[in-house]
Image 1 (cartoon, rainbow, N blue to C red):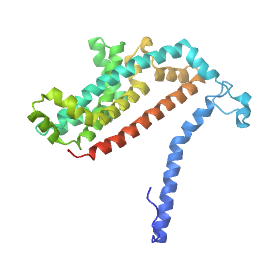
Image 2: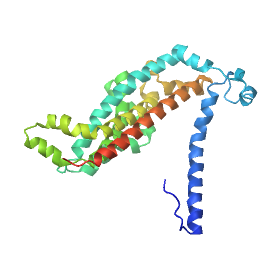
Image 3: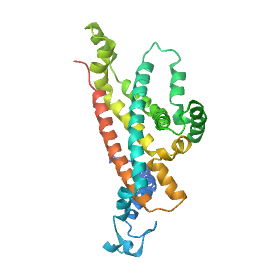
Image 4: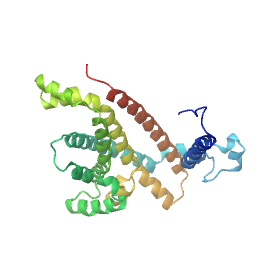
Length: 284
């Protein structure tokens, strides 16, 4: 963060501190709901509010009972199993398709690149409820509604745009002369991709894969349309807990998902910095 220069005028000083105050307030507004959930997940009572014991920092007011319920309740464990089965496969498909699409669209000779890119990233723009309804009618006709593969393919379609965008951003700084040099040495396109191109764009690929994984792991609307009781994921189970019965276990699950998101975002930041360093490299 740049420091305030000593020759700044009073107006510049006022804006300097006002801008940082506004950013701090916005950051607090976004983070405060998460900070509330974390301590509530340790509530010893079956309430969604802070008890007198919790406010007094009495150890008796805190408990791991909601986490214990999550790891021992068959319904929650089945939902966790489904999420763990669906998200990685959807991420693998989204990463493969998105990477190939980004590399193809990066070629100068591809016609209608803008139109193709707009179509490929449309799942990010179209309201999710519309996408889910369209997928429901389409998958019902081909027999994929209510199946694992139906949910996996739907989540892959939602995650692919994130991969395309991150890989495309990485390819912006890619030196095409490296590919031409490999071809001049007799390397075929597949060898060139895995030996030359892939090592340099892997930060963007992994970043897109993490975004696709988060999208699949947190998605609930499409699962409600396409899934059956056998494909109930964690977000679906949380939605059911809020709609049918107020289960405090939701707070524990939400805290765990926040922790997973923080870890993934930390990895994304590390990869972003690595990608910037790689884009600053020059051949030879």
